[in-house]
Length: 448
Image (cartoon, rainbow, N blue to C red):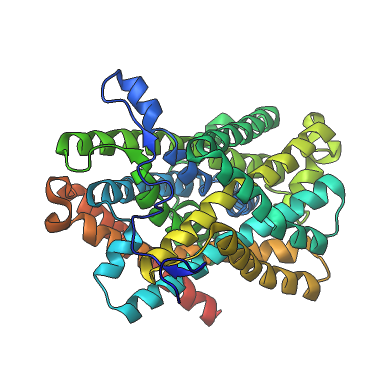
């Protein structure tokens, strides 16, 4: 293997060295001017919190339990804000991403095992994109589901086009697509006119969640779809895209501050969109005797007056399908970047983005094709597969949270930017609770 000239070669450089320290930031200026300069990575991270996997778990949660799981969406979003700020801080302070530091602290074989686990998590995310994109193509153009699945493999061409534009322009495009999704669902929820008091009460935690296994399954699916493992690796890398003096503690502190602001603002938008999805599912489908709560069901309902009354319109259903397609494609770039980060970090292997995308997408397409062939293109069976991929993400999450908490709580690694005591204890509490909940879910599922 040629370490310098081969298409696939050993990676020993900076994290995502193609974009590392490529975006200039002002040395002086107002708070808003600097915030705008640092804004962008948060949008790429937020995309992962509103992909088709979030859609199906949120819609299904609303259809089954109305607004009761809004408390899970809120808690998941707060957890995401804490973890993403820790991941960004790790990258800015150390100059390495989470995968690189984890590999430095473990053995070669240990790094390989961790790489496999994270690759499976990224594959689960890609399955969600494949299914969401294929169903959107079916809804918009009437394409057979199998053909739509195969067509999604060509999104590598979109990726190649975007990478030619430059990283800053990609951030802007992603932010615009997020705005489109936000406007579509804000408008549709406003038309659905949910009971405001019931929505507010949904943010109060319900003890029934832990007692009801089906409810717990959906709750963990929401957690897995919201707090995504690969996003921690992504943020620890792209937070280094800004060009500042890595040896100046004042500039490091400023970078941490503005990157955290960017992350929290973008994740707030993602939180609102996920709430809108759950509220829309609850307002339209809760209490229905029909088998509702799937992408196709929601699309049909938005144009069927017998289900949703006066708000039904072909325009609304088309907007929904367009937003679904945009969501899946929006996640393409972040999933590919995350795959590159974990591959280069854990096993120190580098390959071109287009090759990385082809391999990842082909691996994700195979289980979807098997599901489509076995169930004859049944959308419900395919969407059930999507739901279980989100539960897997929740199970894989502790593998990423534990090293993140360990490293950001280590003063030798972080210096004066080490986690405050409340951050450290809260992060460990989150890891323990999530691990126990998933262990209980696996046990009860096998027993059942």
